Length: 636
Image 1 (spheres, helix red, strand yellow):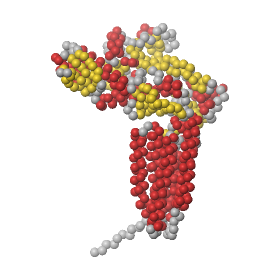
Image 2: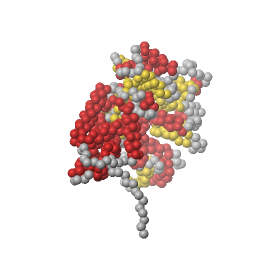
Image 3: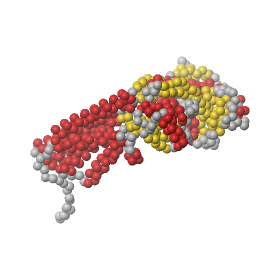
């Protein structure tokens, strides 16, 4: 029995279905659109941002512009991004610096309580229509833009030591609360403590400590020199928690301090297990930056002056020895005398009330601070205890065209002033009409009073704006020269196919710029090196394909079949080479520092785009020109 086979339409050799051509055109169009912002450059700008709920009104903005005009400063454009943010563009950096000083003096007349951040910035000169579509240029690293780079290290030994002191204090308090009391001797060891008590008390002490602290330390009964003791050590997981908390909290504090420098886009990132990278674009005074970052903020617990609060309203005279603050729109008079300082703060974290399940903030103090707090609360139950953050704020003035430090003032901010509902010492919680988000903010504010562990400057680099401009110029030249030489070589070596490769190579650069812009990646000098390397690697894929086509032609294969085999058989070699390079780029990004990461990012993106352009785009052009035709020879 015979069956008729249905007629199958076989696509002509070297042709793409229409959807592939559409995909290539679509990708090229989108890439061209989002790479376009990079050709418009940037303007020196002054960025004014309201802190907390402060807005920049039209009246304030008009007054700022009038003061600029009085100083002979004419902005190119003034744009109000939203109610709390305004960007003013200027022609040059000198006008930008003067405009920043004028605006800051007007918006923040009281340097102790700044309500606005007035920062220097570089605003993209991208047209509005392109910006509305989400177009934005690549960010430039410090080596291209200019600024200061600090690498800071957190002293992890101090962070762990502080926790050991806390666990020792907690052990003592727990054992003294037992009936009858248990007394013993505590000794610090590398990653924990050792407790020695009388033999008759060891079972009871171990049982009570295990019940209370097994989630914080690993408790064991061991024998040392023939004597039973209790050993409490931090587990690897707990040590990592301590280290992570120390780095994250110090990073938060440094972020808050950077605001006083007026930096529009600072980058403060964790690096590794114990380091913090601080990048300050546009800042050139290294000594000033170190002074601000190294400043000490402190948290103070003070009593509210209940006598002064009776009948007090804003504007009234504040009694000697007290300071007036505002909490939720209402005045609060606080004694200047400090009961407990933030140096004794171990931790502050959000939680839920055990009975009402309402959001609260849990606070832990060390033994010394707990003793002082207990003494204070015993005498003042029913009164209010204020938490005040005190920070040394630098003052700047424009002198001979340069922004210089002229002194510093103490800035005090009331965080909260809850009631003392009972006696407490090292462990207590703060209640109020809080949301969960508010308890997180309050906990962060409490912890920002002091660094968890000392932080040291271990590396410092300053890149001037002139050097940054020079780096951009040299980097651009290197790309242009390398690109031009590759284009000339390909055109001479492979003739028409070389021209196709050159078109694909040009589109490859466009794709790299578009992807970097869309991702918001930062372009650095090593990143430019990665682009130059990518140009060579992109050509390498075309060379493999074209040489394979030549081999097929020399073997007597027809032109159309040679094209098809050249692309098909070179594909596996190209994929293998690029995948191994991509793995290397991923490893460089994972374990490298800033400059190495910049190189790895552009290398990885460049590999992806070069594979797309070398395999699909160049094949598309070749198919469009040679596909479906009877060929006698190729220009290759």
